Image 1: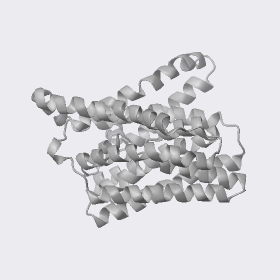
Image 2: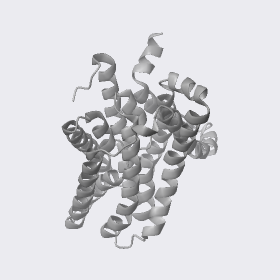
Image 3: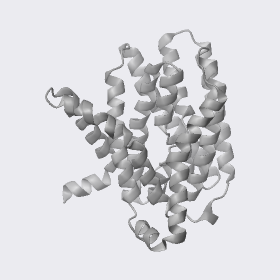
Length: 319
């Protein structure tokens, strides 16, 4: 019983450790490696399904009239655009390769849109699912416009057309955000008993997210272990995201607190869809920089775990 209680209290760290252990087990043990190579791609394929289910059960708790634009939504976008533009200028201004790769890593984290599943953690922390959903839609739309504008400034050979970037991000957003929202609203309208049963299972979406996190952790280790770079560059790509995580969550909470929405503000600016960031970097920038959004996965979920622990122990957040 103590083990079960521990896992419930520290679900996200346990999910990350479990994902890391499974990855190492099926890559470092010779007779298990073939199984790992065969099954690994299948786990990556089911990630969108897990995210869909995570958001579907979360959105079943939303009422349509709760969806409205807030002032802090706009301010968060202004701040994110300013930070992304500032990092582009910083990257262009440095000649040191290690500093440049660290700044590109920070840029890759900042440019990531808000995670589709941010609403899941927001709910656990006492925030508003509806407000976070509206912000996530706005944030993904802004990202689709920012990418083709800013990426070519960092890498002149970055062949990013506006329409291809917009279409790709729109497609990803539709599958993992808009479609589960439509299905959830349809369930509330025509299958209210099913929606009520889902609502009664309060942690179901959170546990779906934990499974998703285990798979992402395996992908993170794979990217780190297969990267062929110096130890200084690796350290920069691992620890710069830590600084970025603290800055984004800190600013987000500060702005949100000004508008009486500290929890939503922190998660909106800090919890990132690193899958999109990894894809963007792999396709349009230096693929090695993809380690930064991978590391961000670890840092943001470590911070989220601490916040969840504070809520469980004290009934409020400590910052």
